[in-house]
Length: 200
Image (tube, rainbow, N blue to C red; front, side, top):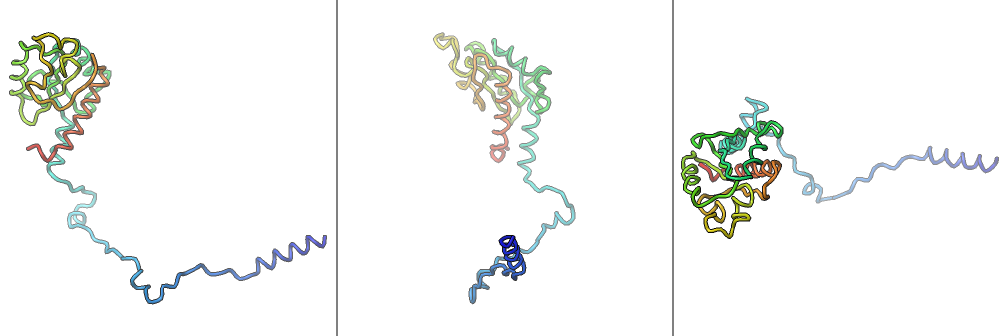
């Protein structure tokens, strides 16, 4: 009983003891030099007149419009074309990316080469590419369009469509699944945003 009374008396004495003030460093003569810089609260004039408006460059706006409204020219040459057709079906809903397949080169800005490119078909591909308006992009879909695929030993097969037209995105596979082509479209959208200052 006596021990408990002594313990309670000590606790009471600790509670009644004055609390130490928080530590404040004394910089002396250096205090003025060590004071944090106070930044003035400044606003651009357009933020005062139109609050909530985002300022950006015209090249960014144009690039965002290009990447969000890709119209691929449907150009199926072999079995990869079946996968390309499946990609544009409602199951994958490419409209959410602004991707709408188009049968005419005059209004298209993306050419998807899906299948084996023979030397007989190469002039037609080149002509369609030249008929597309600028800026224009090319996706090489599948092994055959990229490097000839299993037909590389044949002389009449072109060893990659990049021998006649420039290619922006390569989609691997034989044939690639629709998810791979969707990934190719997304990579192309990233490329459009990265190259925004180089496209007129």
